Length: 236
Ligand SMILES: *Cc1c(COP(=O)(O)O)cnc(C)c1O
Image (cartoon, rainbow, N blue to C red; front, side):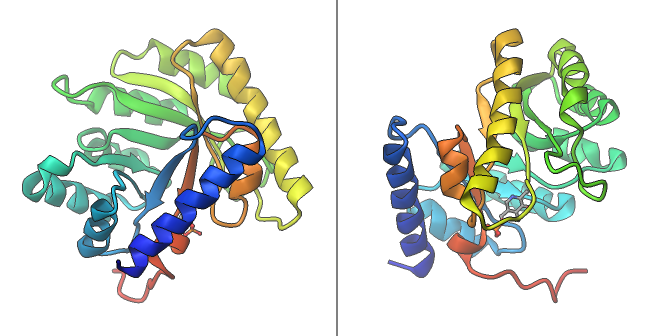
């Protein structure tokens, strides 16, 4: 077994423990393996261990990986999630390839993704990125503006609104982590009451996964703990 496969096994058991600890059903929480900056071979190793959900942050890199797997390994049937910031001039390659986008935070992006989604593909599964800590420097919209954007997304035929995503401030205190995640869970519950397609809460990374699961996360996004530290020195 490779170290990637050992790491996946460990994280999967940590997720199961967290589910059990807070009385959630086994398998409630999906693991998104964040493969940004990592080579094709690392993704293949994870696939060998049964992993099928992968997250990418950078358009160009993500596009070349999706194309590679579509051409060489279509049988693996990977589900690709785009989780990085999107500029409006880069929406097309994302709309044409990815299955999910976690980082929709404004009307213009939603509209373009809808217009550029090929009719031959299923609707793009979309999460609204919320800025819970209210820091201006981060992407995401305030929770008050979510409902307006949700209204727009739900009216667009080539998008399906699935829920919300957030990257809360990095704090080590469990109670503070939990509070931020519970706020987000509340927004998701309010959306779910209006839109029946809403069932997803993308929150929790390596350092705060347990609190996220206790608060109701349905997708945790884990990179380093699976693939090891990232090396950015070769990036163009
Ligand atoms: C990189 C990234 C992750 C994974 O982070 P790690 O610290 O490597 O686990 C999760 N979510 C988002 C949005 C990311 O950009």
